Image 1 (tube, rainbow, N blue to C red):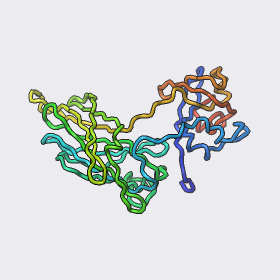
Image 2: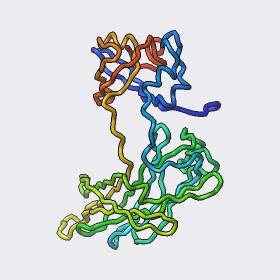
Image 3: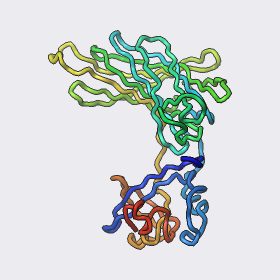
Image 4: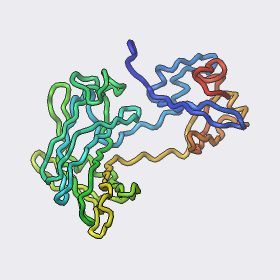
Length: 319
């Protein structure tokens, strides 16, 4: 949209409050304060002052933070599996500063126990020049600040009994706006990541398992690889159905999930508080999309943007 230089995601939902629909807005308050249009006579204060207590504590984000404007991400991978194992699809999971994930295909990785470099053009996500890996028409709200938060591999399982597959991440590298390359040690980046594997059975069923990680010795430049091993069950020799669909596996490597807060801070309208019978500082349980969330209301205002009877097109109801 012309003139827009930044965006902040907002999730809109409805919750039942004493038999009435309440509009719930989940906002990234770190990004929304400067752009939220809020009338002082309805809020009693400015938007930054109102939203500041709702913002989470500042701290480092888990994952590999890519410098602003990073043009490309390259991952050196090696996959070892029994003969007959096909190539795996590799996906990089990136998050923007608001936590919005972007799953981008890196390419295919043969199971030949040889190193392969898979590269991803990040131009469309970071605003740098170059082709768009996402297939979009331009920058997609990342602001040029992305974090690598996961790697995913999907592929077919060899027609063999239980066996071990190993994936080695041997190198991570980013290319900046100046064309320079910066190398990151997989053993350091992936040290606290979690690893899980899911297997799809021939009958469509699924079973989950765990995968183990093991850092390797440092090589040239001080970087060290990281190996992830896991077991899968292929077709057994006593299987009678020769028309079974091939089994598949999915390996998920991801940063640790943040611990959710015991209570979520919130701002509510007077109509909402009247419907719940609660007062400022009280904890109210709100059900959003099937999840029961304990919410503590710190500030009460007359109205909030895009809610209430004056915004019937945007709001599902009130209070």
